[in-house]
Length: 234
Image (cartoon, rainbow, N blue to C red; front, side):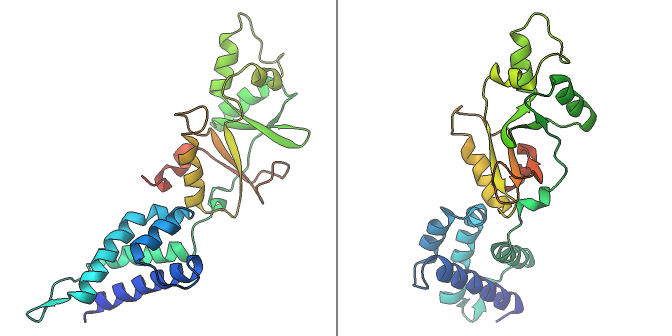
């Protein structure tokens, strides 16, 4: 057996044994059924589900029909070895949303709108978490501001409170607070599923990261759609 074939089968077996042990109490289950079961609850498996189905077929060919007239008929390419090893590494050590850790610019409900506008301009950001009584209650964005402005004839951003803007804007509360220990794949699933929540056909404006996912904790990061798009499974 070639070195690539050995590497492939060893890595595939590591993955299968790990999933069977962690998600099926160590009992046997056909690999395809195991992947379907686990991908329903684990974003990292859902992200690589189609690759794992293909690799399952390749494993079966290699194990059960590996030779014709003494010749190997399935030899994994270097790219396949690199990819399955990458998948195994992500299964063991999935990337965490802490990779998006950064300073979060936020405002209070009694701050003036001009403060938020300055943040948007100076820091080139699109989403600003809003705090009231020590709790994150919303994420202000340009759509909120535009909705509020459209209903006014004369406005002065330095005179109106952010709380008033939120009260008169549509699509409030379109965000979620997540733990810094969450995997990027699970966060991507939250974003993907948000598209079907009210208001339908609209992704969350942001995912706000706190140490344990509580709304009264200090914010350690924020994720918008463009940050997480590459992790969203189709």
